Length: 315
Image 1 (cartoon, rainbow, N blue to C red):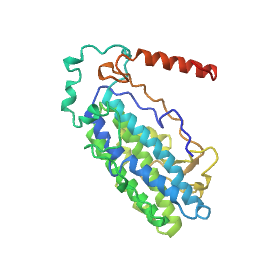
Image 2: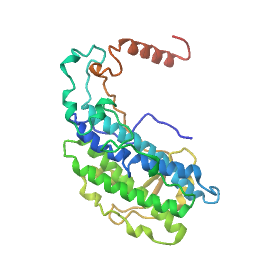
Image 3: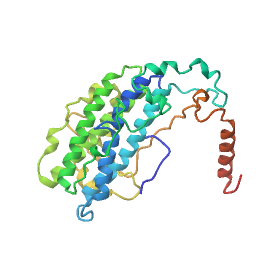
Image 4: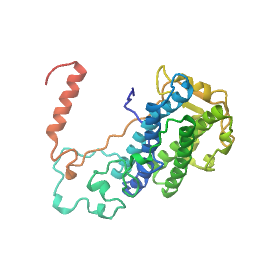
């Protein structure tokens, strides 16, 4: 089962400006071939289909634990997309009529790189790449062969880091939200590639970790990676469970950080990162979001929330 926590894995800085083009560049990290939907889909179904779980417990649990982290990465990128597409947090009036909608209040959306991002999705994230192509099941590999699947996962993480770097390089310093997403995921992607390399080494004796970092991305040159490296995020593997998946210690602990990263021993952390808040995207009545003149919606929701805090009962 999955436990859901109402936080993002990290605190994302609010965008300094509305930037739909940056948002839809970030979509590549969600629905692209090497995006978070692909890493989630691969690891999730591999963990469901894993053969001889009890006999191959450390390897099964590694894939299962990383699955939970990838679900959080899908959430993180999706929030980054929506935040950039909608702009800075605002205390706007989200309960009015939206004014005269015949004046084309969203005329600028005609010129963005992915107009459907507004026209169909209201500035939200969906499982597509930066060109609007749908993520699909053909990006999932689950063979039942543990070495083949782990080798594929290693390849997938290396490809994902390359794409994260290239998306990062399209964002200027004013795109703090998108660059923070990229910086964090570059560090965590390095962890996952390292973990799969060590798992393959334990199984086959081949020192595949000597291929790392692949591609050779010096994280020390990326400002948004620094705080995560300094706090040791590159050395931590999370169980994402209060009591299960502790067998991943057999693969991860006792090893050292990659030579290109700050030194230290690799550690397994029971549970999950502390996380950060989820930003509250303000509704836009002129786009009928959440609906035209939604005062009644907000009143009903307020009454339901109050009742929930008081205990079960009817309206």
